[in-house]
Image (cartoon, rainbow, N blue to C red; front, side, top):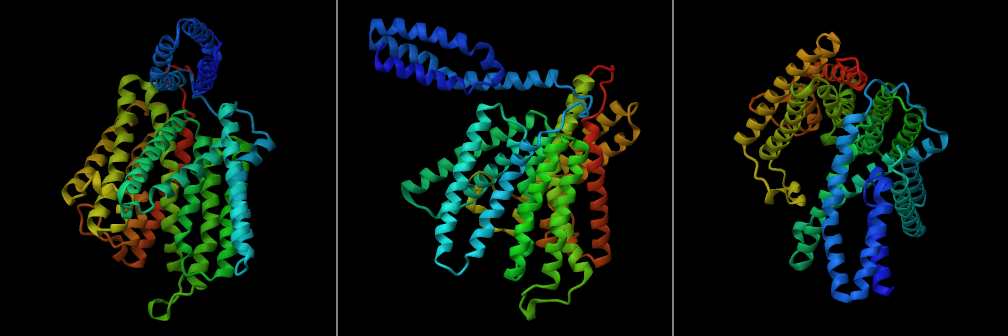
Length: 483
């Protein structure tokens, strides 16, 4: 066989690895054999027949891969057991350490570069460690891809998603000419791939993986609170900010129990946020003319807003897939009700975001070129907020009616939890930017301390209700008794 023929067979073999594992295990050998025969026959006839064979196979392969992934998702939806997570075995200690390792690596990188501050070695050591950690990330990603995406790998992909997000917010709108157009196009392609990957990952309906992947979101939310905290204290706070999630990820993977994992995540966020809020309140370096007397109320506000908002964003995807798991047990009506709730939460959240953007005219959002795709307005934003609320309410009532005979407490929570999630996720907007609630003249940031405290207490109760409800959604029996 010619060199070109061997090259084509090698490339085809590599591309077969992109198919889902179950499909590849069943059909890859047969597909490889058939393609090899076609290539050998075409090689004997000349270059043009070989090119025609390659064109026929390679051009349609991306679409075929996407189709098989979709079929696998649908197949998993049909066969996944929804009875309980009790039968799952705890993860091994080795796998659990790998789940916490990315957080620990970032902590080591930060500690090493901070310890060498004001020395000539800081930049060199930071670059070397950064390259080593990047190599470790790439190696781990390749390993997890070849080994069917073990649960612990979700921790690593959470950081990859965060890196993509940071890359997408670089100010490319100031780049002119060909370079600017290339990077803008590249950014959108990477963002699209990231979103599709995240959608597939979440569609696997493993809430343990979802929590591990979302851990960097909690870390990111606490960084703004550390503004004006003196460096020696900030060093230990940031180190703790990465070490605790690492230990939490180890515990989550080891226990492999959604009922405990949700509370571990919320507890880790609380233990991270309380010392940060305390330091920001009592040990800050705010200029005297802008400072105010430190109080427990100020500390509670600094803690409550990011804690509630990050918790809402972390639990949101789990809530969505839990609602879908519940809805599909009741046939077409159940699935339609679940889709209404999920779509309503997304539309409502985007409406809140759109209204803030219109109200505040924050220009830095132009860094991700959203202005080229969407121009927010007051009327359209308010419409999305209340249309989303209406969809949530209709879908939640539908699910509540269908599930009333199985669990009355869960039925009540089904209505309360989805309605409040988008607003809780936008708490930093309404308490940090003095933005009115959409369609209302009320500004949460201008309420008296006692009313703000009441809102935070209600938010904490809502978050606790969410933490109780989500495991129940993954633990409900089928209405016919079939799991």
